[in-house]
Length: 205
Length: 118
Image 1 (tube, rainbow over the protein chains, first blue to last red):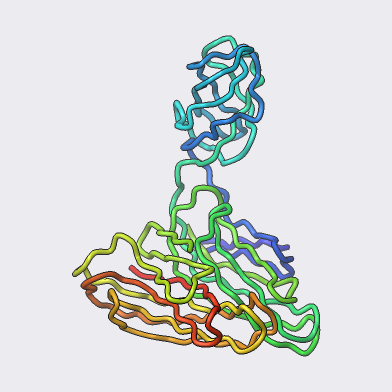
Image 2: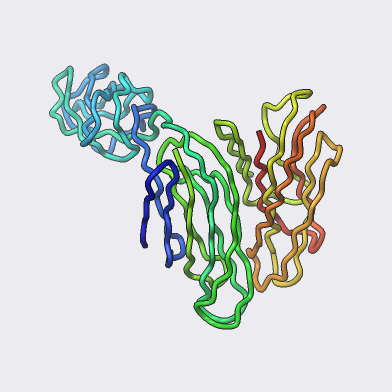
C-alpha cells in the first residue's frame, strides 16, 4: 500500500492493491480529552474516589481524569467519564499509563480514551475506487469513508469482467466537510469476488 | 439506518441499509430557508441474484421534487452499484427535506443512499 502526500492544500492517499476489509488512514486526529471509558483496563491499588491522574501519551499532555469508584483494595472500578482537564495532543486509544497527581495510588492504573475533542474540519473532495477482479464474472466491492469506525458515507462499485486482474472504476465526487474525532480513513470491503481494489482519496484540511 | 450530520458548509446523511418505503430526512432543517441539494448517491442492494431495481425520490415532505432509478443484474445478494446524481437543485422546503427509497424489483431489496446538501 502506497501513500503519497502532495504539497499544497490538497492531499492524495493512493493504493493499488488494497485488500478486502483493509483501510487507508488519511489523518489521525489529536486533541484534548473529551470522553473517558468508565471501566479501566487495569485498576491498580490504593486509589480513592476523587484522586486525580495525569494521562500519559507521547506527544500529549495536560489531560487529567478523576477516579469515581474503587473497591476494598483501592482498585479503580470506574472513572468519571468527563475528563478533569482536557489537555492536548491525545488520540483515542486503550490502556494509557497514568501518573498520580493526588492520592496514594500505586501508579499502575490505566485509562482508555473513548473520544477526543473534534479537530479541524477536513474536506473529502473525491474518492476513486476501482475493484480488481480475482476471477472472471460479476464483481462487487464497497468503499466506506469513516471517522474511526463510524461510517460517514458508503458507496458500491459493481461490474462484470472476463478475467482476473481486470478493474472497474467508479468516481465519487463527494465534497463532504466534517470535523473528525478519531481518524479519517477509507475502508474497502469485497462483496462478491473483487478481493482487492485501488482506492484514491483527494482531501484537504 | 445510520444518519451522520457533518459540520461545515456541506452536509451529508448516509445510509447503507435503507429498507424500501423508508425516508432519510435531513434533521433540523426547517421550512422556508433555501437549501441546495448538491447531489445524491444511491444504489439498490440486491437481496438475491438477478435483476434488481430501485427508485429514489427527493421530497419536500411527501411532495416529490426529483426521482431517479438504480439498476443492476446481480450475481449474488449484497451486490450494489452506487449512482451519483449531480443535481444542484435549490429550493425552499415547506415541510422537510428527505430522500425516499422504494423497491421496484424485487420487493424486498434495500439501498444505500446519501444526500449532499448545504
